[in-house]
Image (cartoon, rainbow, N blue to C red; front, top):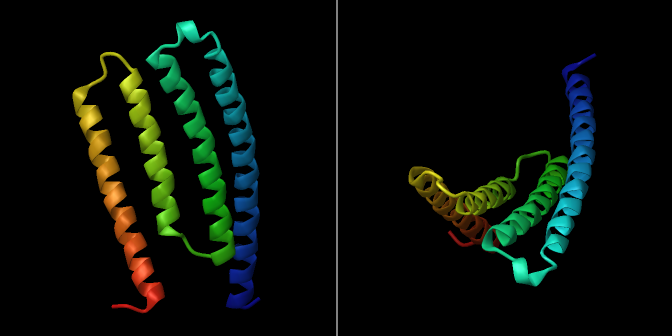
Amino acid sequence: MDVKDIIRTFRIISIILYLIIIIITVVLGAVALYLAIHDIIALAPFSSITDIKILSALSAVFLVVIALEFVDMFLEYIRTGSVVVDLVLAVVLTAISRELLLYVATPGASLDYGIILVASILVLAVAYWLISRARAMQSSGAR
């Protein structure tokens, strides 16, 4: 067995593992979708809606979005064979945004933690913008 065969074997194993991870993520995404629908339906008596209930429902919806972004990221990795940094940043940005929603809904949460979350979102947004801009410049041939 030469090196190319070993690399091909590990690539196949890697793809199989990613497919298993995708299936698990889809199942978890379906559960998150069920929970999001449940939270939205629980808002039905509109006279008793609170900001905490709305933030909880939004948090559940964010979980579905995160699961979808994970699947997209894994599929893109399988397709290209390399990590797509802007997709990774989008997933992390969404996850931290969800965490910020949970932070806002938590009474008595630490101000330092909130500042760290907002700073993280700003840094990730700038990184995402820079990568998107670099990719656009690269595809247009501009330097």
